[in-house]
Image 1 (cartoon, rainbow, N blue to C red):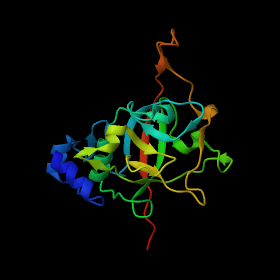
Image 2 (tube, rainbow, N blue to C red):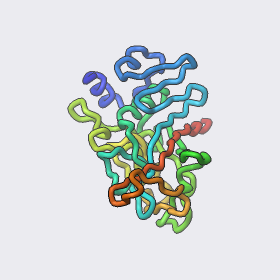
Image 3 (cartoon, helix red, strand yellow):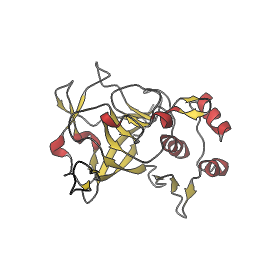
Image 4 (cartoon, rainbow, N blue to C red):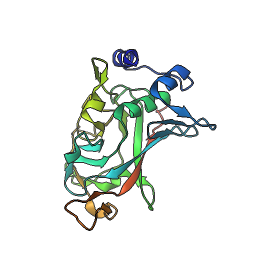
Length: 225
């Protein structure tokens, strides 16, 4: 496994076929009879090459810097928290055949979210762009790919999967720069977030958010050249 980490760290534009059985075995990925792939809790749908994974709402009010983190990541500024290891998301993107790099060269995605017992919608609808002073437009998120050090995935160590207001290299996806101001300040539109569902609701001081969602990465077709 260490050799695999090293290969990914020195070949940032590596594109591996989903048929690579050795890679599937090393990552613990499983393929169902329809050709869909599951790695950790990330699901790669063969028919449309979307990648989805579960999470829960983490912040309902205030400024966010991160769209999705793990519990060891920047939870104090992350909209959604997931149990998916960032490295597993990176491997899911590679297994699906996506290319990482900078915002000009990498494959890009729109991100949608499905709250439990609700309809699917762009995650951007939950945010207000405080820099542009308007509701956030539907944005693109590029496959940056995490840096590695000593064979270890830095995104996994730091716990952040999708950043929205930085060009951090220790994450899996970053928001593409927008116009003259590449970094914007985003505020959660709390009126758009589904009502909270608390575990231990009878004791709110001990309770925590249990409003589950499913995050979906939808590939944006590359423009014709």
